[in-house]
Image (cartoon, rainbow, N blue to C red):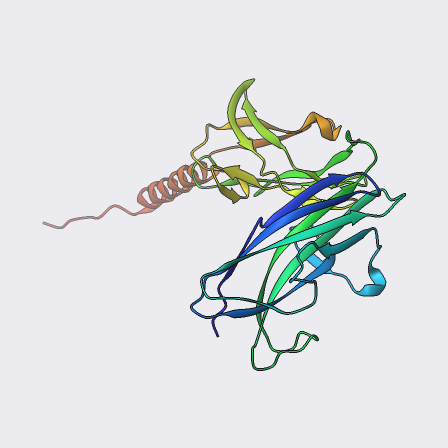
Length: 290
């Protein structure tokens, strides 16, 4: 049986006060030619490393600050239900924050497609699953005091040539607060006091007490922050500036671009010409006889 599901929204971000219940509608579409049996579950996770990966938690690791249930009469969490071919179902998820709680909670709403010939509530016989991340900040105040820190802002490679070296700018944004935020900001590259290039950071989520590598965004593409040659030789400054709401000072680094390969090639040609000249001078004259 093919796996061909879609879910909207693909991610949900919420800021709610303690002891509050909200609802969120999810549209689940079966794009296949046959009916599918699904099971909806909620699985908590935490950030794993600095690249945006997540690790799903065991029951003993979960800090229980949210309650989840469904508003639907015919769809319950953990109970299989069916969507006919090329049809859509809506799940209305109820999310309740517990009283006297402050901080973040990260979950995923998973829709697991089950094998119709081996249905059971343990999840065996799963064909595939699709999910939507849920990031919830619980705070009695609507204006959160975020605190970020810029770490390890640097460029690669060490040797930067005017023609042959793309320059990559790397760094980590550390979240020193209890609530997730996005890496809103920009990198401004200047030379001789004039703006050479501006790069826009991709607004990636940084989980509470975690760090995230910076990436840049061009139109809808997310990629490493980089500059492509050619460059004028000289000294450049790169300044990483974040959204003022993140309460961190800009960080500036300096790098140098030089025509290394061109200089090396000219040097090699000079040495080769010098050697050839020496050989010609040392060659004995040829005598002719009459």
